[in-house]
Each structure stands twice: as C-alpha cells, then as structure tokens.
Image 1 (tube, one colour):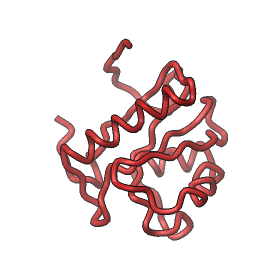
Image 2 (tube, rainbow, N blue to C red; image 1 turned 30 degrees about the horizontal axis):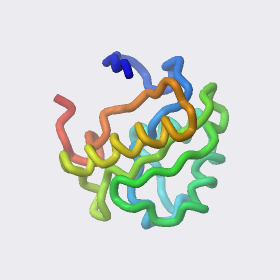
Image 3 (spheres, rainbow, N blue to C red; image 1 turned 90 degrees about the vertical axis):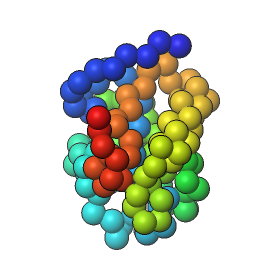
Image 4 (spheres, rainbow, N blue to C red; image 1 turned 180 degrees about the vertical axis):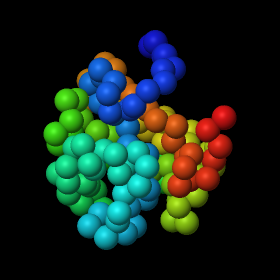
Length: 128
C-alpha cells in the first residue's frame, strides 16, 4: 500500500472515496449543523449521504459507515467516529478511526482514499 501526504482541499482529490471525520452519531443527523470537513462535504455533496447515515444509528467510537457520495465525483464517503460523545478526540480515537477507514476502504474495493486530519478542529487536537 502506498501513502502520500498532500495539501489541498479534501473534496478536490482524485480518489475513489473520501473520509468524513464524523462523531458517534448520538444526535440525529437532521439536528446537527455540520462544521469543518463535514460541513464542506454537506455543502458539496448535499444531504443524501447524511440521510443514509440514519440506518447505522449510533456509531461506536472508531466505527465507520459508508454512504454514497451524493453530488461528489467519488464512489463513496466513509464516515468515521473519531470524536467521543463530548465532541473531543484523542490519539486513541484517531487511531481507531483511521484503522476503521482503511479496513472499510479495502472491504469496498476502494483503491484510493483521501483522509483529512481527523481529530483537529472540533476534536481539539493540534494539526501539527
């Protein structure tokens, strides 16, 4: 497997799937006002991927759910729960989320994947 670190907009990457740093989904999707990466995904992809999250219910910490990509030019969105119920992240939650995202990408046959800096922003971790 090859890994590359690139700078740029997650949504402009030429990949099979992108990763959305989500939460444990305790609050229904329609009550949330996604911020950061999730907000950018919602604005460009539309509501469909977030509506699809309903069928997964509450995601366990580090868990994942794959949805369609809505209006995005990728095959799917892997939503990972990298934030706990208090909307905080840690090295452990990020590790769980990244492992889940990579395993989910393999199980769906995605050959390329774009991951943002999970746990930064709302999660409180430093991007450096």
